[in-house]
Every structure is written in structure tokens, then in C-alpha cells.
View (tube, rainbow, N blue to C red):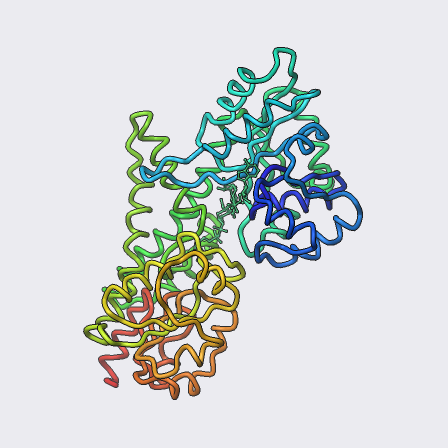
Length: 441
Ligand code: NAD
Ligand code: UGA
């Protein structure tokens, strides 16, 4: 398993738990040293125990030596990052660096698997690239095996996936992949075997469809505000239709993370580079980009100018149960607030260290939500961590200078917040406006 990030480490540990012998390789020496000493470089529920158990059993090992990793393996997974370039296309330099290293160590037949999310056509290009670099008698096949796990529930998602997609074109490769995933076969997980390009497109299409559901509901939220409807009930009413499904219909400040935004940009690029304009996918992306600004707009409607105001931001991670800040809406919001001259106090249960290390914006880090709210002019709830669902509202309000609460994830019920005396704003609750008119605060 080459790459020990969110996907590589979780996949490596889970595949070891399936009974395979796994070597995880990373070029980051600090990361490998940490893993070897029993530490875990990312926050992911259940991962520490899983890694510990499989290291103890001798099935899971960590190394920086790619030769050791490749030469000793039948199947080599490439699980390195594929970040977006400034033009939206995927940066494949990490993937091809790894492919180059693999080409030097093909001591016997191997299956080389693209686990990273790559543009359609990449796995076949990896094959041609390795064929051109490797000795003439090197034997290998390539497979596209995209990963569908979510951060925050990655271990559970890998252990009990809705499906496994394997793009493979030789029987030998298919057979080896079936052995790797044998425990999932036994629990009757659907395993879909396709050609390489189809497997790659299934991944992009799935992420784009999930993002479509979210952006669609955010559009309905904007309309709900204008017509006096409640988007939570609209989504519940829609989701009860089995053809629509109730998941991923939660309106708010939009999707972030290392994957949905980047994979949508990549899909737009894939289509455009073949001369097709992907109207729907582009609209999903454009709408999502506007949402952090809309949250700050709601704040300004309550507070007027923000210069000199103290704003408390609850939640930094792009979603709960992760420390990942990549493309997090919180960063866009905080940047806007600081640019407007506000001072920002923040609290997040796990992502503050990451923020300190990676985001060069001056904020005050606090120990808990109440310290962050202390003498603030407004609270913005940006990530719906469980502990923010049960805030002591009287205590919070008492700590604040002004009782303005912008709920970017629709965690609270408007009526309850009005009853507590908050000037409360959320997304897509047109009833808020009606209630405000009926009972001015
Ligand atoms: P990540 O940034 O967390 O980890 C990548 C790791 O690869 C890093 O530890 C890095 O040091 C290592 N690396 C880079 N070059 C290397 C090399 N030459 N040799 C060895 N190691 C190298 O990335 P991630 O979030 O795990 O994502 C990996 C891929 O999986 C991406 O394509 C992503 O789109 C896809 N994916 C991610 C998720 C997710 O939830 N994060 C889910 C599904 C798919
Ligand atoms: C997403 C997909 O769900 C995974 O299947 C996929 O493997 C992964 O991308 C990937 O390719 O990396 P992830 O980014 O970890 O997983 O998180 P999600 O749970 O999908 O949430 C993404 C964003 O959408 C978050 O910012 C979340 O707050 C937001 N979201 C989610 C909503 O705004 N509304 C919803 O109803 C659901």
C-alpha cells in the first residue's frame, strides 16, 4: 500500500484485518516513524485499535522503502494524493512518481492497483508508462479499484462497503483482487467488475452525484427562505420517496473536504478536455462556492459592519469526526470575517492543531465553546460536531455580548432559539422570517 494518508492507512489496516500481509509505504519519514512507534498521524475513529491489533499480529508493517514494499508483494496499491491543480485538473505527479518507482522493482508478476481517485484513462496510462520504463520481461497487470470510504467513518465504510468496484481486464488480475477482498465476498458485498475506464468514471460520477444532492438541497433552501417553507421538512418529505432516498439532502453551508470539490473540478476538466460542457456538474460547483459568503452575509444582516466585532466560530473541520481541513467552509468564512475587520475566536474538538499548522490566519484558539463565545458579538456554528448539538444555551447567551447565532448546519430549531432570546439565522428555514415578523425581538 503506497501512501499512508486517509485512504492508504485505513485500506492497509483493513486489508491486514482481512487476513492479508500488508506493507504500508510512505515517503514521509516522520509519518512512518510515528506509525512504527504506535502513533496515528490522522484522526479517524477506530483506526488506532485496528492498526495496533494488526501490527501486533505481524500482518501490518510500515516502511519508507518502496523496494521492500513492491518486491515483497503480489498486489501493489497506489493510494497517494491527487490534488487539484489551479486549472481544476488533477495533479498526477505523485501517482506517476510512484509508478516510476514501481517499474524498478517488478521482480515477479504483480497487480498494480490505482486506489487513488484518478481521471478516466489514468490507469491505462499508468500501465503504458510502467511498460515503457520496466525491463522487457516484467510481468504485471493494472487494476482500477476506486475507494468510496468517508472520513470520520472510514474504517466502518471499508469493512462494510455498499460495493467494491474493480476495473480489471485479465482473469489473473480479477482472481487476485477477489482473494484480497475475500472476506467481503463472504458477507455478500456486491463486487462489480468492469473495464478500467468504467471503474474510474463510477468514482467520479458517484462523488458528483452526492454533491448534486447537496447542492440541489441548498438551492431548495434558498427558495424555501423566499417562499416561507422549511427546508428540513422539504428534504424529509422528498427523502421518504425511495427513488430519491433520504441521505445527503442536508442543507447548510455546503460541501467541503479533500474530495467532493476536487473530484468535481476534475470531472469538469475531464469532460471539457473531450469537448463536452458539463452544465449540471459546473452548476453544482458554482452554487457550492457561494455558500460560505452567504453565511457571512446573514451575519452582516444581523450585525451591520463587522469591523471590530468579535465572532465565535464553532467547528473548523470540513465535517464532524475528522481533523481534515482541506477545502473546509470554515476557512472561507474565517478569511471573509478577518478581511472585514472582525476578530475571530474558534473552538473545534480535534482540528485546532491542524488549523494552527496549516492555515495562516490570525484567530484565537479556545478551550471550549463557552470560552470561544465569551464577549462575542455572534456565534457561527460551522461544523455539526455532536457536542455542539447539546450546547447549554442560557450559558452560551450569557457569555455573549450580542445574542446572534448563525447556524450554518441547521442543528437547532428556530423556535427554540427564539425562545432562548437568540437572533437566530440558519439555512432554508423560511419560517424563521415569518416568526420574526410575528414576534419582533
Ligand atoms: P493524503 O494526502 O491523506 O495521503 C497521501 C499520502 O501519500 C501522504 O502520506 C504522502 O506522504 C504519501 N505519498 C506521496 N507521494 C508518495 C510516494 N512517492 N511514495 C510513497 N508515499 C507517498 O491523501 P488521501 O486523502 O488518503 O487521498 C489519497 C487518494 O484517495 C486521493 O486520490 C483521494 O482523492 C482518494 N480518496 C480519498 C478519500 C478520503 O476520504 N480522503 C476517499 C476516497 C478516495
Ligand atoms: C466523500 C464521499 O461521501 C465518499 O464516498 C468518498 O469516498 C469521498 O468523498 C472521497 O472520494 O474522498 P467525505 O468527503 O469524507 O466523503 O465526506 P462526506 O460525508 O461525503 O461529506 C462531504 C461534505 O458534504 C462535508 O463538508 C459535509 O458537511 C457535506 N454534506 C454532506 C452536506 O453539506 N450535506 C449532506 O447532506 C451531506
